[in-house]
Image (cartoon, rainbow, N blue to C red; front, side, top):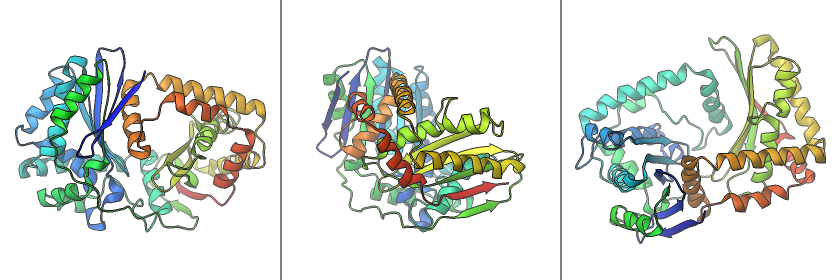
Length: 405
C-alpha cells in the first residue's frame, strides 16, 4: 500500500497508509525523551507522559479514560530515550475522535495539582516494579555505564526524590523547550482516504502554534570499556555484554541488524541459542539486541544463568563472536539468515500498530516513512564480507560487561 505524507504549516509532519481493516491506529510521536532532560529534570519526560492523561482544558481524567474505551478502543503512551508517543486504537469510524483526543492531551493538558500528586504514587509503584525485575533493570544500569557522562546515561523513570518535586511549572518548561512542532509526526494506518486523513490533521493539528526547535542534542561522550559485577538478591545471575554501535543514519546499521538477528534473534536456531541453550543447557534465555540512537547505538548480548555457569557462558559467547569476526560466516549461513530475517520483516509488517509507529519513527529520523519495499533490496545485497566487516568493528574489540549475581 502506498504511503501518503505531507507537512502542516506549523511543521508537524503527517503520514498515512491505507489498509483494508475495520481497525484504525494513530499516534503522535514527539522527538523528545529522557536524553533531553537536564540533570535537575531526570525522569521528567516519562512523568509528563503520565501527566498528559490527568486533565485538559475541556476534559477531566475520567473523561479522558472513557473517551475511546467506551467505544471499544484503546489509548496509551510510552517514553524512550529519544521519543514520547501518545497513540490510540479505534474502529475506523472513530479515527477522528482518536486524533482529536491525542491533540487535546498533547497540546491542551492543564496538569491539575491533585491529579498530578496522585499520579506520582503510580510512578513510584512503577519504579518499585522495575527494581524487582533484574532482567529489565540490568539494561538501564548497563546504559548508565556505557554512556556515563552523557545525556543518554540515566534511567528513563528517574527516582522518587526527583519525581516528588515536579509540578506544573517544571512540566510546562520542559514542554515549551522540547515539544517542538517541527519534531513531531502524526501517523495513522487505517481504511480511510487521503482526503479524510488530511481533513482530520488540518482540523486538529494545524491550529497548534508553531514552535520550532532551538537546541541540538549533545553527542554521546566516549568512554572506556568496563567490567562490573554487582551483587543482587536474585535467584540467578543476569549478564549483559556489548558495546556502542551504529547510529540511525549509518548505512552499516542494516548489516548489523541482520548479524544481531543471526546471533540471538527470536528464532530457536540463532547461533547463541544453539551454543548456550541447545548444546550445553546453560541458559533458558539468551538474546542479542541492537538499538540505534540519533548519534550512536548499542549492541548487546543478554543471558540469565546459574551463578556457577557465568564464566562458561561468557567463554562460549566470546568463542562464537571470534568465529564470526574471523570470517566464519559461510555463504549458506548468510542465505538462510537473510531469508529468516526477511520472513520476520514481512510477518511484522502484518502488525498495523507496529507499522504506524515505524512510519512515525522513520519520518522523524529520515524525513520520510520507510517501506518494506525499500529495505528488502538493502538486505538482499548484503554479503559475507559486509557482515564480517561489521562484526569486526562492533564485536572485535573489548566488550563492556555487567553482571548481577
